[in-house]
Image 1 (cartoon, rainbow over the protein chains, first blue to last red):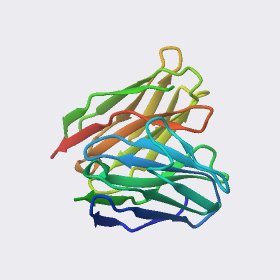
Image 2: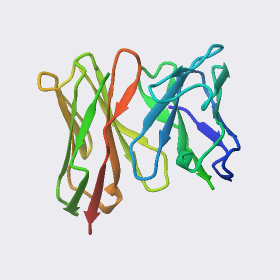
Image 3: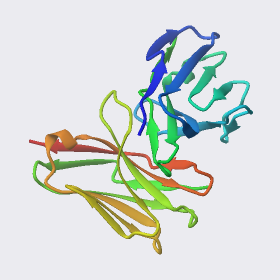
Length: 115
Length: 111
């Protein structure tokens, strides 16, 4: 497995502003993902963070709203842009660790509330 | 794309009883099926998984079964304990390394 940290752990933001969430892993990973988990709901994949290139977004998610960076094998950021109350959710990064086949491990999540 | 259905959405059992959660998937190319446990306010934790070349896997009180023909897989928890209370998610993994999650099952184990 891996030690995955996210910053911030929670935040309360005003509508129209943006928040950048950081994900740091203590070992090299082959894949990094960003998920959203709305209150009481399941996990929805936002995008795959690709090292050194544009992220691959799932249907319903666009780069202008959720820009993602992944400058190296162990770090990624997700920005939630021009926020509205509907963006209130938990955002989680997830990784597949090199050598761990397909196992995905989740970060602790960032709880975002938009007022 | 893949679609994963999970049942039941809530499950209440008496301590010591068994609990079974079932999932079906749609993409016959899916080849890896993990289960996650999420306690309140915590991250999802991988508790067990099964690959498409195996029909059953056990780890102490937890077992998973897979029926590739019928495209369904199940989580079995025996001798349930109050600390088993959580939301459980199944998922299916396809060749694109994507996980599609089921809707979750809230398991309540009553002492």
